[in-house]
Image (cartoon, rainbow, N blue to C red; front, top):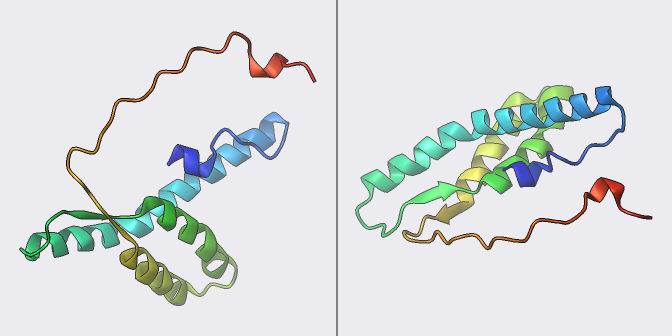
Length: 122
């Protein structure tokens, strides 16, 4: 999830701007987790109750994060909590991913960079 939020990408150059960006992104991740948790529990309960399903499913976290960003205006500024959260629940519940067993692979190790990107010539 850290790569989806682009935690290292800051909009400002001052220490205050970097700190503000960091806390805003952490808040967004926390809000996404809080909104998506009931839906994830519902998806797991559906899998446990249905014997016909071959593989377990989970919600698409990237889509949930994107939807959280989209509904923030409706929730915070327009204060349309019910409509925004119902739309969020509907879309996140419909975008699921199948968890395939044995789908973890070793990462390819890249050689360490010989110089820091901060001191790169222009």
